[in-house]
Length: 406
Length: 140
Image (cartoon, rainbow over all chains, first blue to last red; front, side, top):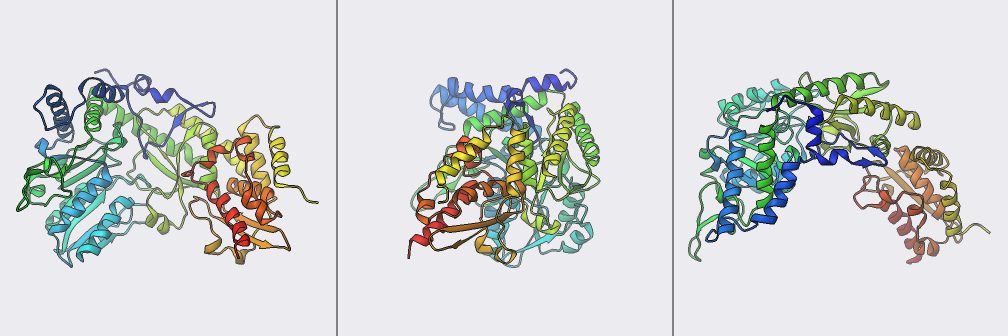
């Protein structure tokens, strides 16, 4: 493995050579989705060219091969997140699907008055499934407040925890603020009152090393497409002893043991939670994404990304009238900001004209926008294939846009 | 005799032919926003707000004897320029002409990218609103 070199890494991501509006693409929308390295793109193509078949049906050669590749991907991902068993890794459609699975299946075991704890900086996908559960089961949703600087109010968190708390479902890194939450503390405290913990790692799996045994979370969710894999595939990790007693989420093929009209019995983990033909090529290509990550100098990549994040914040502070939304001491390389009274949409539109992709709007965190009393933000979210030169060009493009918008 | 919808569209296309750079084009769109006939503050109500835009856009319409006159506003200045262009084309026309108009100038001046239904600035929503205001005048 050679030492991290951003130019070598960029060569692995073909899309980074594209032009947009006649300008070289600067892709700063990694929080929405990441770009894909060649091994991932090629894996999808080679699967459909040489191996395509349905899995777990295996009397013939191709099906055996597809099943092996699918299960190998599960093992690869289990090893990457340090799950103790690969059957604790369930393939889903993405983070939203993973959270909905837990909300349904664990929800079936809850009683009216049981409490669910989330935070004020959750993505809608970690709010709405719990609200739906509360309507269905009479459980109660509690919300940890967010401080003006964009961190969790830990005193309020301590006060909200009680023996009624059955689940803490919390975002690891805020997709809007970039805040890195103190998850070890949160998980430890929640376990003290007997609550289970779901960690939404959609914005952390691609930025930090994740070790589910060290974290001791009961569930971990993320989307494949944000960690250099394809869309439509994601992961629900769950501890075996936590997942096993839960009823299945969806019924259908693959998730059953025996079906009769009198009584159907269910398959064991992980297939109990994988009803129907899964996204086979997606799962295999997600495995390829994790193989890619372990093939590069990942420590060096994360370090580079941290440097970029610090540089971005420092350069952005030079912009007159800039306001950061989220000033937590621990942040990822994601930055939400506003400049004077410039509307985020205006700035986003002009940046796009200069070849720069950023996100504008509420970032699926409307309650958070309401708290900060803003309609939305401009968000730059970086990945390890970005460069300091791109940040310099970003600053120039912002200044040029400001000139037009003033 | 005021100009027809297509005469105004052709005028706009001609104006935009002067620009070969996106920056000049957007500078002009922003300038056009300053000519927008503004909706009065008390008319900025929920029912006049166009949904599906990241920015807020309000549109009001009022009939003179035979023609429909639009006013509007937005909190984003590019959006304000775009609605200003639409109103320049469609305001002070008969409801029938508004409803049956074909807005070919959008593609010709290079704003077709804003026509995608998921595009956050909601040009499609604006056009639908102007036309549906026209339609309301035609249906008793």
